[in-house]
Image 1 (cartoon, rainbow, N blue to C red):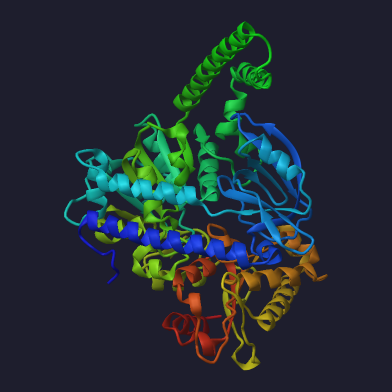
Image 2 (tube, rainbow, N blue to C red):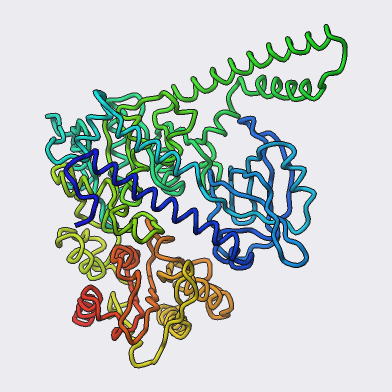
Amino acid sequence: MKATETNSPILHLQQQQLLLRMEYEYEKEEFKRQTETMGVARKVKRGLCWYPVSTGRSYYNSLNQLVLEVNRSEDLDIEHNFEYGRPVCFFRQSADGSLTYYNFTATVSYADETRMVVVMPGAGSIVDVQAAERLGVQLFFDETSYRTMFEALADVLRAKGNRLAELRDILLGSNLKAGFRELYPVRFPWLNTTQEHAVNRVLCARDVAIVHGPPGTGKTTTLVEAIYETLHREPQVLVCAQSNMAVDWISEKLVDRGVNVLRIGNPTRVNDKMLSFTYEHRFESHPSYPELWSIRKELRQLGGQGRRGSYSEREALRNRMSRLRDRATALELQINTELFDSAHVIASTLVSSNHRLLGGRRFGTLFIDEAAQALEAACWIAIRKADRVVLAGDHCQLPPTIKCYDAARGGLDCTLMEKIASNKPGCVSLLKVQYRMHEAIMRFSSQWFYDNQVEAAPDVKHRGILDWDRPITWIDTSEMEFKEEFVGDSFGRINKSEADLLIDKLQAYIERIGGKRILDERIDFAIISPYKAQVQYLRGKVKNSATLRPYRHLLTINTVDGFQGQERDVVFISLVRANEQGQIGFLGDLRRMNVAMTRARMKLVILGEAATLSHHPFYKTLIHYINTLDT
């Protein structure tokens, strides 16, 4: 039994504090170690650093923040971890290779593949980095997120005689039942029976409801419908998720449905549609903004005049600046009030729900998407602002990212959604019809993870690309003497021979389908591996393959985590592990394998050494299942 399994909400939260502290100390120490010992080239490969970079223009953005554009010299086809809200630090590299860090931190406002906009602490810091040669920027330890999570846990522990205290005791205690209203069911002819039931359970819930969406079952469709219907009963709701990408996804679907969304924070994918509902864009587009901008500009000019002139002139300057500041404050308040009052949905990450813009605001309902990927403490940040909570996700897919093994083992990896689903099964609505996969691809996942309750919709049940083709193939490398290599803690393992074989099999399968048909029908492919090193090696192989060049735009290569929420027609998986000891490492986290396997619509090919993997009952059963499928 994990240490967090207790009937006392107070004891449970105190344990969460201890486990979160362990994770905090571990990650802080890990950051320090990386900063001091890891070379720049390795940091760049791991997506933690850009080097070399050049600085672009600096300016005040619409939120009156001083920002600096940073460009990396070349797109190395390496995924990076820079995104909105993350802290960064700058450094310069000397001729001898030693690094000198600047003694300030900045915050990412926006980042794409080669360009970043960062909020700087002041004009002096911009002058410093613009004058530097051999400049680099790397992620800094995210103290703010941890501080916010610790504050949230402390608030929940202290809560007494209010709605937060009630929610704490209902969500975490096993004695109090979650309440449901009796409402006449609403019909949704465009939803299936389990989706319709889930939406009605959300509408009836007084305290908490869970929408459990296995792969391909239309969880987002159901959640959007639940939010849309809730807005017929409430003027405004808060919608959160763990990652910026998940917030973008649900926000975009709500905008498509005609919902007025105000997105706090910048989107990960920038296009006109996504930008149109961000707070910053809406603020800048407000009719009163030009006046505010000109006042801010004048204030900066007046502030630069310093102590020049006579006493009366300085006094007049102070009075002028004071009046301008009062007017600027009044305009900001007016714009914010109008933006927030007109929005139906406020959307942000869980950590960003603590943003100063949301200070003092309360919501009837909080929706948390991808709740099974969020630390419990992060969920409480947003729950503090709500009267009831709806969690959507799948605790049989990707878990939260936890770096400290002891913290995970102690129960930090057990999410709030998982805990509520276990203690209060009556709050859970399982979506049971999937619209993505051939039945044979889906069936093993349904049997192992979902008590065989998930079934394939009739129109996808037998979908395939080629006649007389097996929907799942296991390519056993046991007789080929392939061996894995350890590359490093954060980069994992690599099996180059297995990767080479995968490319050969992929090219052969493309030849079987026919290149013209692939391009005409836009048949898309995924190559997935749990290990970053293998992904990087496979990307290099594809990039250098003349045969695959025409199909590169239809081919995505990524880790399991990078494919969450996505799907492709054909999926190849490289499992990498091949050793005499039968060790499979974090392939033992079966939730990741569930995600990897269920990305495929029509064809799934898995490469792995059965001799190594069969030591684990899951893989032994999977191999048997694939080998006994009818052709």
